[in-house]
Length: 330
Image (cartoon, rainbow, N blue to C red):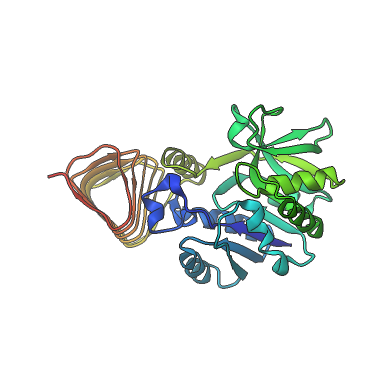
């Protein structure tokens, strides 16, 4: 089985951070979003990955090469963003006739990966949501099989949202249906969507079983990214690397602090993730994500997302600051 991870999106809702790095490489609870996804699939036995890249794709390639040299990896460029269906179609020659596991590049979920992979059926991950109009939606029968999927319906007939996890046993069938939606110019909301190809497969007799994810961590925008960071820190307990200088500092767990950080006269936590080689002095930081090589001095940060190579001085409360930024409130 091969894994396909589309990470070509520009991440507009997480700007300014995604001007300088792909959304999949934004840190959360001590790891990148992409590492949460790759590690989960690799631990379940998948060793071959296809990354669909676009905007800042070279950074994805560099990160994967450095972090996962043991994996078999392929990189496919989606130069024109025409939807998830278009993205998946670009992998056809690499996939061949193998089964595939598709997971969107900003989808972190708790589920039994091995159980899903071992199922004799194709599988789609779902979770009940209050307002399904912004998601792909699955209509499921009493036996757990999916009868219909539709992308962002105006009037949903189900509140079971597709979370962005798809195990496809019949990859040839998938690419036939992708070809069909292209040839018939079938689009949802202006794009060639994977959901439409899956519905084509269902209408032509493919069996899809649903599986419910235990938790779905939303990494799509600042507020939900910070919430997911807090939840994952609670789940895994945080991680403070050795070799730090913590002078006159109080650490309130759970926090994650990468190697090489210098922290003095500060209160850190709870729910804080700090990147490598960052310096924090005379500051209070809670419920925040701080990038690498960043300098914080005399600040009070709450619910903030600070990029890498940033410098913030003075008093503040809630910020969303990208990489290579300098702010002085003095």
